[in-house]
Length: 190
Image (cartoon, rainbow, N blue to C red):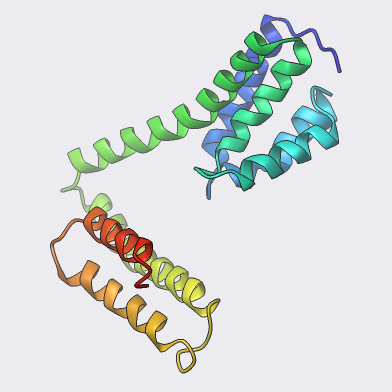
């Protein structure tokens, strides 16, 4: 496929992915259908096979799952004729998908901290706390339940409960617990 994209096309790609960044509640992966509609169906910048292989390769590779967005941009650039344009496509799509949502989260957190004494902010935080805890418990339950029942895999279930209690009841930073778990896993103890 040999494309010729002008400045307005690249700006359109930037704008579309920036919009998706703000709509991607649950992560960039939730916007895949619209990315496909835009890149394959509407703009014809990628083929179905290129889109699917980009998704499969990025999901199989180690690292954050948002890397598929960069790979989509890379392939758009390659279709335009070279590695320089591929690098530009990668940069445009990753910047567009990461910066707006990150900036929104940063500004909202600063505003919330600055206005933490407002009744509405306190009510929002108090209302969200049980929801966040419930979602974390549900995630832990699903991850553990996929590995068997409490009777059959008691050590795994015990480790889950102990980990949750340690994170909840101690003031040790979570990264230390994650590092400890990684070390225990590398040693083959868990």
